[in-house]
Image 1 (cartoon, rainbow, N blue to C red):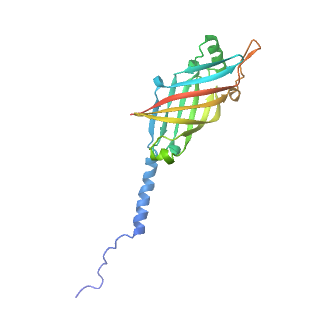
Image 2 (image 1 turned 90 degrees about the horizontal axis):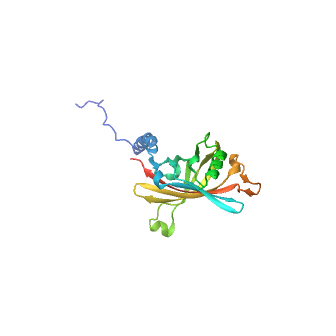
Image 3 (image 1 turned 180 degrees about the vertical axis):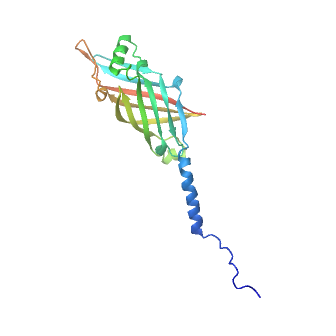
Length: 212
């Protein structure tokens, strides 16, 4: 005679419980996935920063190849993950005239504040659409958002840039205006007649090599 209190067969999990289990696994994995960002470091031999200034009766420029730094980002979500910094040694900026170079270094207080630093906090991405999207044209235009530090003074800075992909690297090009008065620098004068305009334009071309 069969027993009347036999155990019931185990029931298959409901779709709702399966979904909850999968969601739990994903939530556990997401933090580690978000932390996986690609690291790119500056290649100084193929990078440079140049500024263009206007003075009474003439224009001049200064340039340096002493560019250092890195950026980190997730290629699948550049706008949400970009961070990093780029440094330029102030004393290496060369205008072609030794005396002017020394005056510039004094104004920048290059001994006390040796580096001019851009700190990247985030980026916004302009989506590729239309014919460009169909042609697979990448990368899109990017806007870098962060701070610029000159002479120990930090100011917010937004820089529109263009990216050029290269083998194992990316070249970043852009330009932005800087008013030296924002960083506590009084435009220099010479002989009470020659005066440098307070706003200079900075242009850069920086190659970032993917770290192994």
